[in-house]
Picture 1: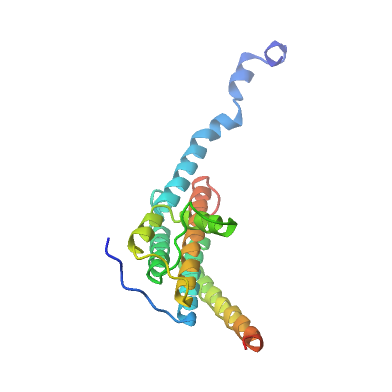
Picture 2: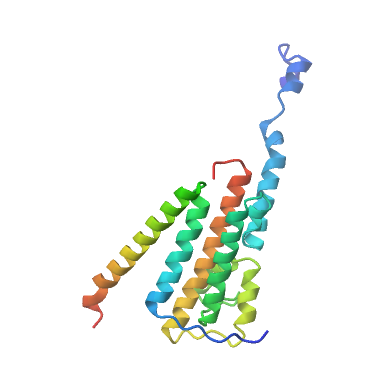
Length: 147
Length: 64
């Protein structure tokens, strides 16, 4: 038992708290920034005053979602019939709140019988994965890693 | 919400849109100084176009 060791004075015990306890608030903050970045593209960077990056991420994800939905790309839902539909749904969910924007503006449904619809599906998936990468970047930046 | 008019892009236009958006975003996320960002964006865009068009030409013999 550590407390019973004769070499551990009270000063030594109190001066060395577990490193995890010290890192916890920063880690929670970083997770919150990452989550915010996923929910609203660019918000994770905006909360850290990285205005240029926030604007670029917001516009890039927004443009890809708008173009993908306008080209009648497939916005996947939970009711996927196979693994590819599920993967597509996960990728589309990566856009956060923009997923619902894509569903709203594509009220006439997808049309992947033409090449445009297929390209649109890829652009939507790209928007989701790009936003996940940006959210991860916001998380790493909040942790103090060079970014 | 009212459905928006469909957007019709050629294969190359869709590819160009993808390449530009990804290059700009990666440039801003991956580099801090403006000069480095511009260099990264231009180089990344060039490579996207080179590889995309290269793969397109490589597939040409099998397209018919």
